[in-house]
Image (cartoon, rainbow, N blue to C red; front, top):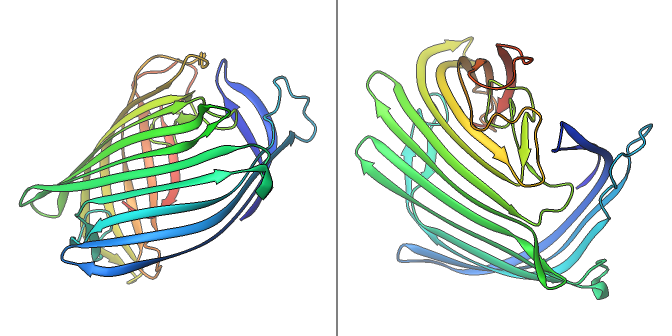
Length: 312
């Protein structure tokens, strides 16, 4: 990947800084497995990663804050993954009238790498990554999925740019093509690099608020959503669904004093879902109208969002 973009960091009072970011990522990897043994698959992996982020002042802007230092991580790594072979055929969960393979087993994954000047990195660092996921069929009509991750590095003797996440998703099937969906997620950052942060807003879970309305090195988000999967099939190209939802969340941190910080923020709303059946990616167009229940009085009392996602 080779990407040149303009990044904005939020915090303090609104926009903290803007800068140009040039990201270059190259991955080469391989692995082996003994195949399925009983219900489990073991995978051993290895690889080499070049992960460069170079920063410069935004064109035409005089930076008010120092821009981040270049981050060049080049490292070999090894990994191990243990996966339980348990899947379920489902329909009308994250797609509309489309077969879904739902993973219901346990999954463990860890990897460890070492970045060195000898490989071309601009620092010595241990790169680590881990993930654990599991699921439960709590009743015949409900499924709970849990997931947690830890990613970061040990740099100059301290943990840096590390993110810890935990999330849960609950699906409860109701009669007549209705489904109740809820999710809860929590994120924490440890010594995050200047260009990394957690944001909440219209595009990141709080649909009743402007984009990137809150920012911080911690965030939490709860969503409750009623989904309806209709039988309407427009031109045999688009399947139609609908949703009503309630969002509640907050992003915060010691170095983030948001002018609009009102603590926990809430919104309610409704929307249409248009599933493109001719798309191999299962793309779903979201047309939402959401209403903030908190926040400062200067924001619009209704937010209109049009987004494309890979799920309902």
